[in-house]
Length: 155
Image 1 (cartoon, one colour):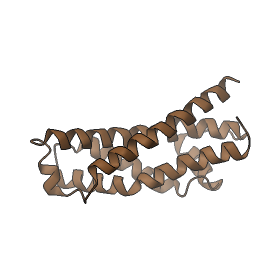
Image 2 (tube, helix red, strand yellow):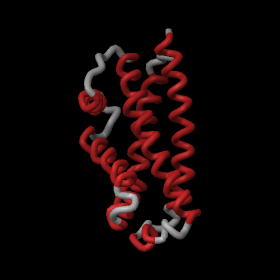
Image 3 (spheres, rainbow, N blue to C red):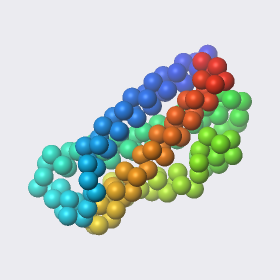
Image 4 (cartoon, one colour):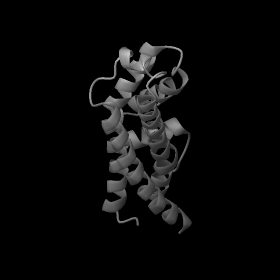
């Protein structure tokens, strides 16, 4: 019973995180995020806050879905959980995730947005623009898991 309560809680959290990420995504990417914009982050506090919120929300949703919701979903449908990459591969095999490899690539983007923030403006601009293009991929995976839970009447 406790896992079902946790699953229900995580579904609510994921839905809220999707809304927050989509909001930040719209605020940062009204146009292409270029190296020119990346270079202004040290003097444009408003843009820097928007970028920081986007990066944080992007990483948080990815973590919540991949590290928390995915294992609980697997348990709820009677699958054994394993190492993170094995869970992703199982989700791909079960058609909930388009590509485990792509998920890992998107995870790398998150790291570039954080670790390369000050070092390399081009890496940051490219990572942010690529992350923007992957928001739907993360959202779709989350929605696939939630839809499957509802379809199976697990909650």
